[in-house]
Image (cartoon, rainbow, N blue to C red; front, side, top):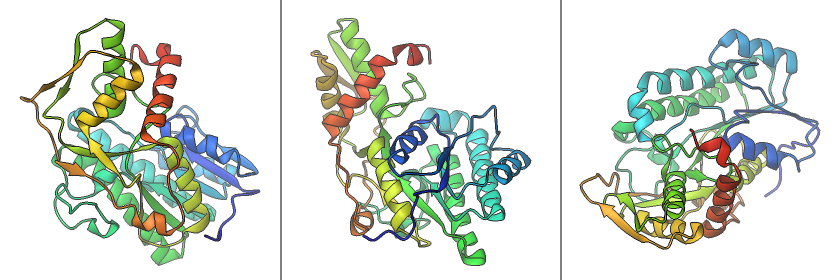
Length: 319
């Protein structure tokens, strides 16, 4: 697909560059011949504070912006800190979008999450399923903030003609992930669990539920490639799903992780624990039609994530 916006020679601001997605974007943008890749730490700019964001963006004048900064976490974190997940994410998004418009940013991409979709949306989930029924209650605070970001981009496009777009990643994993035993998502949680079982010569490792729910996953470097592709080729109000277009059961995933980690014990299931939504797969038809497909297989991605995990043990051991 022909490019409609070039990143070559542009000053590009990647918010949240210390996170998994932001870090992958910085890596990917290195091959785009950008004039400068701008990053900001929380100590430099508190993105929840409107004045701080406006002052920074006025002084630095980026041409393009990726909003990958967010307060993120798993079900337990969402349920424990609902006010923070709603307020922090609303403020981060609103401040950056408003300041970007006022300072004349040429193009902006907002990153959402697959949790924006209704709990029982038809599978695979197409973009037009947004706001058609109720959300999953355990992460609705985060989802509402992300839906607001989509709507803000649409509103600024409609009222001001701003070239602001949105992308909705599926479940992500890879280098820089959060491996906290309580607050992590399923792949980093399984990697850590399998690694610790291997190190402790355990006979087995356990997963919650029956292992039958199906989930979709995408390596974060594939996501970064897709986001750069969309930034260069897409300009419309509707958000775009970014995923692999394929899913597998949690049991299949756990066994794949065990194989990659080298844990040869058995897999057990605590069926007293809930399974959650039976299936969650986003349609990839739209982004395939825009000329992008992933290139990293699940096994290769898991191997890459595990290698990073082992190499950075000092960074995750106490998290």
